[in-house]
Amino acid sequence: MLAHEVLLSFASKLEFEPVGGTIGNLTLGRGKIAGVPAYVAMVENRIASGSLGVKESDKLASLFKVVAAQKAPLLMYLDSAGARVSEGLPALGAFRHMYRAALAMAASGARTAVYCGANCFGGASMLACLAGTRYYAKNTRLAMSGPAILAQSAGVSVLDEMFQAMSMSSIGAEARTKLSLGNLPATAASLGEPLVAAATLQQRHIELGARLSQISKGVMVTPAEKVERKDLAKLYPEHYDLTGKDGLMFGEALYQGAPVSVVGLTGGSLLGATRAWQAADLIWKMQASPPKALHLLVDCESHATALDDERVMLSAYLADLACAIHALGAAGTHIESTVLEKLGGGVYVALSAAAAQVNLLYGAGIQLLPGRAIASILGDAGESHFDFAEYQKARVAEHELKLGIV
Image (cartoon, rainbow, N blue to C red; front, side):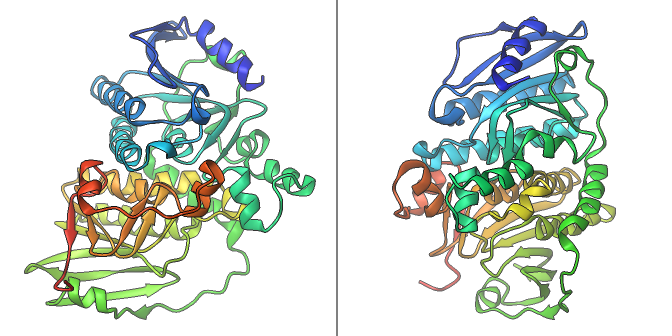
């Protein structure tokens, strides 16, 4: 089935009845799956590539809270490029809070399934990866980055036939359905199948680790080294003991007289599947003895844009990292994310959605997407600069750290 056929069957087979009017690209309602009442959300490509603006994200957040509280079935049709770039910071803040509600829903045990349309990119792909099952139309493409950004990263034209073939073999429906049991082809029969209990979030983490063997062969293992940085010395003047390797650091520190655990994504390099999984693994392991506080430190502008990372479904690794942070917060750990330099896109969502507080070091910045990605969408390559009050108003960050610098 092609995406438009999936959409038509989705509405008819599920006996979809809309509740309220359509909001941008979003329509909410009720339906039935195998005779069982279910909530239904349809995100269609009507405006700006099906992107999710403030109103759509806020409505979805409310729905996810109801689904989590009732542990009710949820079915989604998702044809979306992610957060709406034209709405800027407010769209990013709204998406953050929507994704927080989606994480709680995923952890609640509610049975969920996503039927993917033609495109499922960026934050929308991270949302799809929280579902117990994903169904793909024949022409579905699911990835953190769309083909234009992937081609730009590879140094080729998006119209290059060889690149198009490589891209589809990495992010297309056939490739995705080969990755795990949670990825299935969309068929007329699948639209009537009852929702089954999915693997637990920690089981999914283990499966993602096994999948990494596809891109880790022959990679040199570098030794961990003690981390010393001027910004860390100002952030933790009493004491810090951190070890780092390959852009991932971890350890302990004293903050305002109290011990905190620290995990950092540093070095400025883009976040790929391997480092995201390693960070998630550190945080999942803290579940055995949850610390009172965890600080997530980051100077990682965005996610990786390489086909190798997309072949293993980078979106799932960012979703896994977000799930680990949410689970630790639910266990009682106070979690803060601190932006040391630049942060944006799906990495921001993964690190901030479940955090109790996002801190911004004076001079650091958060953006919806890196400038090159915004340029490919809006044609404007200029980077935006914001006052901290704008971050607060948009619900993107809560606190600015000046650390005696000014």
